[in-house]
Length: 123
Image 1 (cartoon, rainbow, N blue to C red):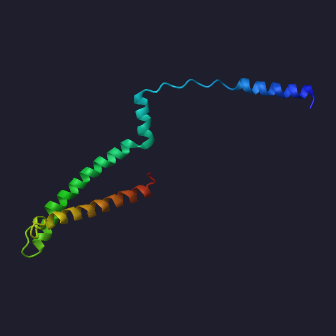
Image 2 (cartoon, helix red, strand yellow):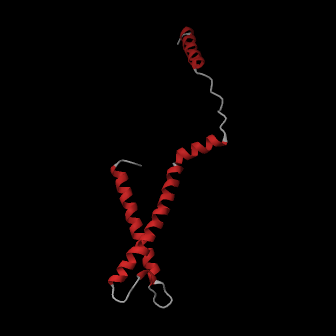
Image 3 (cartoon, rainbow, N blue to C red):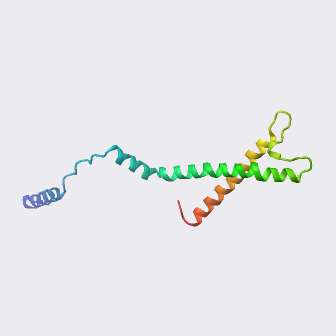
């Protein structure tokens, strides 16, 4: 390579380096900005809303099971007025039935919500 070619290449390198803008100074993020970025990145609001709704849906289903379903089933069985108050010795079998039926119904509702969300392409 001749000196002229080397000088030409060096000029190209200098021009390329001069065109690069200087790095911008780091933006000063307030605690509020960092908090908003955290919420949007990890979708915390959606999680909080889902948790609160699930909590109250669970309470609603528990009331449905305890106050409507088990008393109706208890009336259908001769000699049982209300299955939710049924006990065997010191064991509250009725309360276990309330918890079991509540879990089954809430799990089924969550299954349906996930199925609908997948169908609508919601993440």
